Image (cartoon, rainbow, N blue to C red; front, side):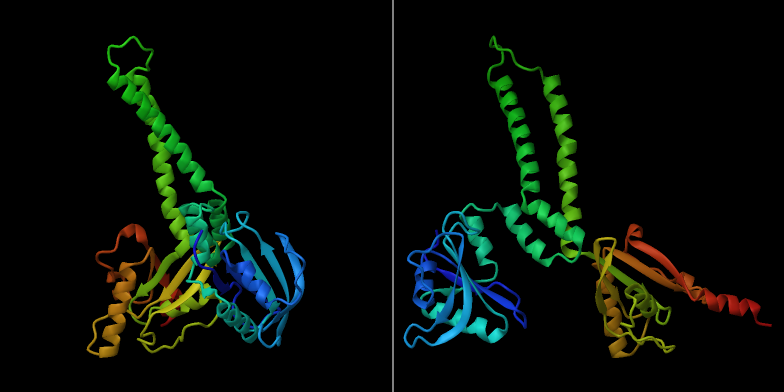
Length: 342
């Protein structure tokens, strides 16, 4: 158990019906008893109580609340936890938080409730990481992936592989240490077969790390190409909104425009970049520099070409793996019109 009691506003700050202030630690209940007017004879764990939060010295009412008491160790942090459900809005929640700090709690650091859950053995590291991933999930698939990990999916797989590996090591040590003894031991060929079965399982689990990164961070998708080939138009089409300015003037986009996109449950971070070209313009040069940096760090690059410009086919991105590039051809309407002109 940690020596001090921490407190934080657990709900998103802003206008809403309810906010929740959470306390965790040995003094959580004692602090509540100092500021809660609706005191029962004794607080029972996992019960909700109605009353008012008041200032101890003046008995001035801060808010009408519902409070919950959760007795250790059957809590998220395995410490005593108090949750104060107050009315929404920044002012009331802040006033109650300030009050509990005055009574001996301290403001929790970011992620400290989950850190305590980990340190107290309530969660392992894979589950602790899954909590923040679940909070930040941008799609249903991302949330499902994080929830699977939070419920011990990854932990159980690792544990199974660990037990299988340990068994093989024990057999190997026996075969090495007791060579020549009259013991019934597996031969080396049988042990090799077990290892051959185990290796693909391990490789398969390692591959899921990349999948997890995609659901956690999203696919970095960069739209690149020469100036005025239609990169911003493509961004607007993908987003189904006029996010980027589109004009016939080359070099309209000078900085990177970044937006989130959900494609079949997979989160994408789509970036429109400045057209890559040689220029003496300081601002345009900086834009090109940022574009090249974004392309270097991309997971996928949509290279947009102007189908009506014969010279555009020479455009390429040196140093970028071909597997990351998807060629996109734009302005076919201009090709048709040029063919139909006298």
